[in-house]
Length: 195
Image 1 (tube, rainbow, N blue to C red):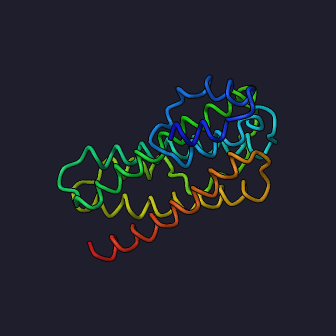
Image 2 (tube, rainbow, N blue to C red):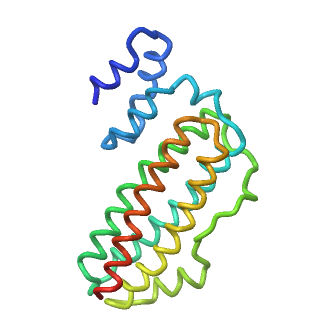
Image 3 (cartoon, helix red, strand yellow):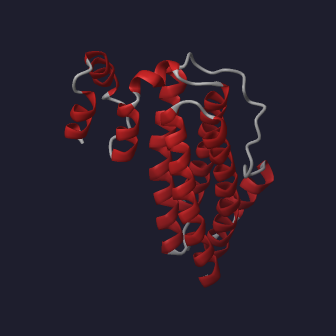
């Protein structure tokens, strides 16, 4: 990965300096994210619009809830191992994305007040309580059902960013979310059919 970063930064001292300052970001194991982040570092600080800010703010909140849901099911006994494996995968994928988006928001001047955007797929308090109270196989099925809805909301938000966002890194992440979560929905629907 260092070779990719060096290759992308070569010849442009300013980019190299920005990359050196950003090299500690916790997107470590995700070479696609690093590549996306390093190829357009100059635009990350200035080339963004309100849609990018809204996307990052809302997707951070959306991802945090997905991690909370994953933690709930991971803390239970009697849940199908394929469900807990998927919950761990979701958690492991989304935390680095949260860190990346929070980094963008900081570089874009912190948080704006774009919270009016639709965050489809979010679970209500009663949905979260139902998942918290469920046990065993029921918890696994409920998690899958809720997470399909949650992912569909994230995909809709990401597709909106692809259409209206300006920042190339944010748009690239949105496309990655669409791809990754569409595949996870197919996996979850298959698991639901088999439980």
